[in-house]
Image (cartoon, rainbow over all chains, first blue to last red; front, side, top):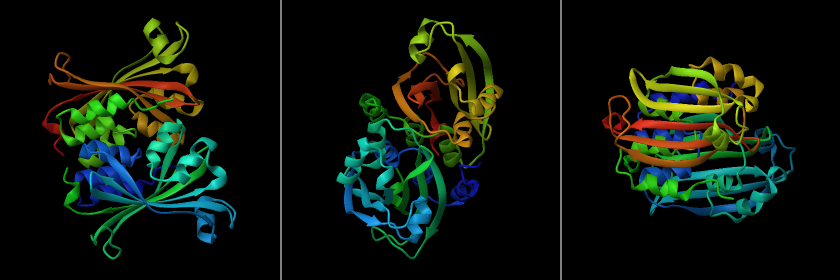
Length: 173
Length: 173
């Protein structure tokens, strides 16, 4: 079994982007935590959307849950100080959320890294893919690095996450 | 329960050190992986020592194993390209090593991050402490940042790790 997409690492190493962005986009640890260390500022979460949806065909395949299952959809922006650094979408099957983190996940405004950390839960992160696009801007920046990965617990996808990072000089930290 | 030492993060944020060093010293993910991303070079492990010891009082307390238990002692240097970046000591109770990683752990020359990743094992990392000293040089550098943490699996310490980083301009990446 391979849990790292070796293409993921290869792609990441060739991107001509600021080192701190490459690090955030490549870490298998908490992005929130890294942002806090890099910027030396407090990191806050602004929730753009959070609601429960029924798994469609695509989500069902991504999360390996039956179609129609309840899935928590959460779209947030991570700020360090007053600068936005990341737009993160997470999809979490309700039935797989351990009881002690369900409330925090639904309440939003707490970074996922912090929720997992406070719960003491054991996980691993499996990368899907990474790419840079020029046609789907965030924070008024047209060049965007996007990566996706699974947070795995008890050998099931507890959460699928897509993170999008603006590629500009804010990462020169 | 608190799994992050909030002092750990606070201490790390005030150190006046290169950002890439702060990131490596603060990550709750794999250091090898970050080094590879930061330097865009292959990371290699040179084993300085690797043998089985009997747990003394201090190890017994650190790892929560009976005194006299078999513990794998492993001291390695991580190189990116031909530059040494980290000296890492790990102590792992033999009885707690999952069967599928035992061989890799004893064989050495494979980074721990890669061993864990290839095994697909689920873990969390709990920080102990972090400090900077001037009296215990590595790689001919007298200013050294040292941090310690536990890799926890099945709610037991599978590994205790101390990493020491030279504080100098090699981290200006």
